[in-house]
Length: 523
Image 1: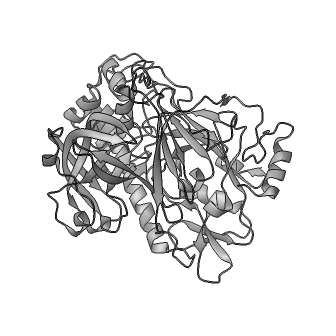
Image 2 (image 1 turned 45 degrees about the vertical axis):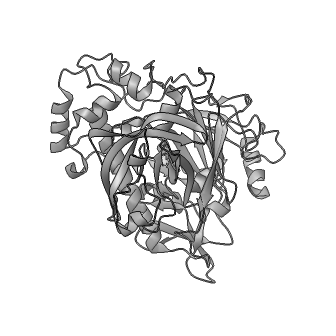
C-alpha cells in the first residue's frame, strides 16, 4: 500500500484525472498506454514460496556479502542471455554493450539455432530481420514488428550470420542491427482443454527469491523451481549427480519416466558470476505446471552442480523469458503450453507479496488487482521483457536519466541501474550516501524516498515502489541508516533491471500474444 502522503502529492502532480478505486496505487493521466476493461479469469494458480532471506539477516540488517554475490550472479545471467541471443538468432541484441568479452560468447551452434528457428536467410524482409521459419519458431506466426524499436533496421545483408559473428568476436561495435519484435501468436484457448491456472509461489525471505512447484515425467515427480522472467531455460539436478549440492535437492531420474528422451548433441552449461556452475545434458519429458501439461518439454538435467547451489531452497530454475535467450536453444515451458493449446490466454501474471504469492497461468487473477486499473506497455525488444521507462523521485522526474530501457525480471531481487545512472538517481534523494564498493546506497530509515517509475511512450502513469520493499535492511543493529534497493552496477546490459523490489508493488501480467507487459494496482 502506498502512504497517504505519497497519494496526496501524486494526485496533485497528476490532477485532474485519478483512479476511482478506494485505495489506488496508481494515478492516471491522459496517455497513449492502453487501459483495458478487465476480462473474466479462469486460470491456474501456482503458489509461490518465500522462506528465509539472503540479502537481509534475521535482525533486519543487510548482508552486504550476499548482496554483492547476488549482483555477480545477475551479471553472469545477462551476459549469458545476450550471448545466447546471438547464438540462437545470428544477431546482436540491442541491449548488448558496445564491446563485449569474446569469452562470454559461445561457439555458433547451428543445431541450437535449428531448434528454435532455421538459420538467418540472406535477403530477409526488412520488416523483420528473422527468416520466416525463425519468426514462427521463436516468436510465433505473424512476424509483425512491434512499436518502439530503438534503431531502424538497415537493408538486408548478404553476409552470412557466421561471418558476422566472427567479425563481432574481433571487436563489438555499437549495435548495427536490431532484431525486430514480431508478435508471438500462439493460439492459446483453441483446444477444448485450454484453461488458466495459478501456481503458488514461495517467497525467499524478504522477497529475494520466489519459487513454485512443478511435476515432471510419467510418474509426476515433484520439484521446486525459481521462477525467472530474466532467463528462458528449465533445468533440474540429475539423479546421476552425487555432489553435496545435488544431494541437497530432489533429483530428476529420466529412467523412471516412460515419456523421457535424451536429446543428442545438446548440453547444459551455465557459469555464474559468483563462481558457481551447472552442467549436464538435455532431455525431453512431460512437465505438469499448475495442472497444465506440456508434452515433450526440453529440460536441462544437471549432472554437475557446484557447492553454491547447496543452500538454495529450490531444486532448479524455470525461465519465463523469450526462447531467443535460451542456453539450450529450446522452447520455454510456457510457450509450449501456448502452442499445445493448454492455456486459455497467452498470458501469465505474478503476485509477489510477503505471503500468498502466486504465478497465474493463462490470464489474470481478478482477486489480486483493482478492476479497471490495468495499463499495457509494449515490449520494445525480445528476448527479455523490455520496456521504455523513466524514474521519478518524490515529485521530480530524474531528468538527467532521460528515457531508459528497463527489464522486468522476477529472477533479480533488487532494482539494478548502470553505475552512472544510479549515481544520478541517488543524487535526487536527500541524505543519500554510497555504502561499500558494490554500488549500494543508504538513506535515512525514518524518511524513505518516494520512488516511482513510468513506462511506455506517454509516461502518464506512476507505479510506486513501496517503502517496505525498497528497504533492504539497516546497515547495523540500531543504525538510523537503511540500504536502498536501487543499486548501481554495470552488469553487462544497457538497461535497468526492475526486480522483485518493484514487482512486489504491482500486479504484473506478461502477454506473449501482443508482446506487452501490463501493470495493475494491487487489490
